[in-house]
Image (tube, rainbow, N blue to C red; front, side, top):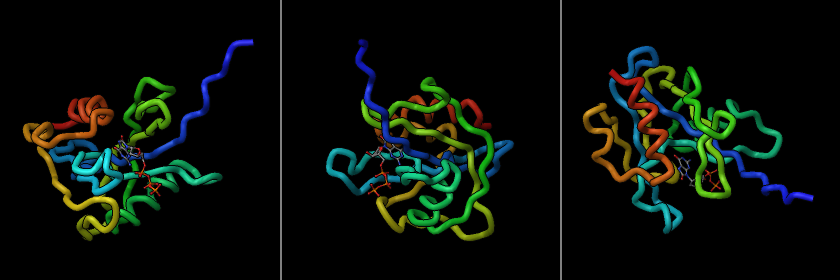
Length: 143
Ligand SMILES: Nc1nc2c([nH]c(=O)n2[C@H]2C[C@H](O)[C@@H](COP(=O)(O)OP(=O)(O)OP(=O)(O)O)O2)c(=O)[nH]1
């Protein structure tokens, strides 16, 4: 009998932009932990809890990490049934999102710096390696 690959843990990520139909800037967040990821830049988000919906997890993570409510737009489709591989053990679903309301994102949890990056600045920060293809896909939406 063929061995079945162990199921990957599901993570959700937000490609937070200023304008979902004509994005000019994307929010990058610098991680503080774990040591292997500290200093690397990523999309805000995190692990989906058992029994939790993907969108519900995205709303929860953005509120916990950045203190913002969000609107969710189109999914940025990746190669693994629409998601993006993170190493061997995680898979990340990513959506274009924007902040709902006027509250600015703050690095409350897991991050020590946030930057709104224009398309020209997008690769000025050291993204976590697995985020690079995702950021490249987002860059194609940016004007
Ligand atoms: N959130 C997020 N995690 C990423 C990205 N790229 C990447 O390699 N990862 C990795 C880091 C982590 O090993 C894992 C996601 O876990 P996390 O630490 O963000 O999840 P969480 O907020 O639920 O954290 P915790 O409750 O388990 O502490 O995926 C990304 O763009 N966003």
